[in-house]
Image (cartoon, rainbow, N blue to C red; front, side, top):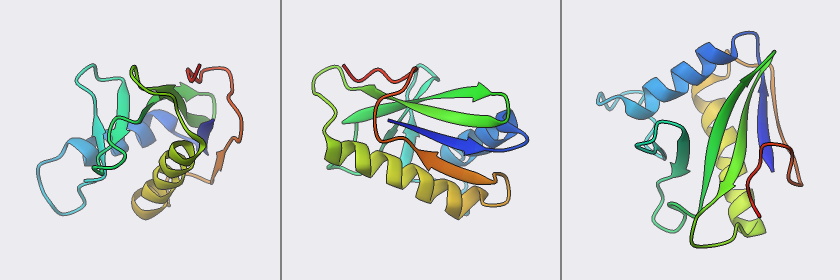
Length: 116
């Protein structure tokens, strides 16, 4: 249940994502994701999906990975998983298509996912 972005500069890709999420300027701002005050987790902002799950980013050799973390008060449903993963990939394609080679979402939990 992870999303991986293969890229040459994973730290720069994460920094670009953070900048677009946190910026105040409306042009180019990512309004669909928010970063938690802990500085480590991201959740979707849509009313129906907000805080249903979280992503935690991890910089790896040649890729930026986002691992799914369940909310404290509810399990991660397969529908929430699909929504979060699909929308994260959509966001990166819309904003950062020149900064990664390919994206992949796993169907089952991987090392790093905290969904149990």
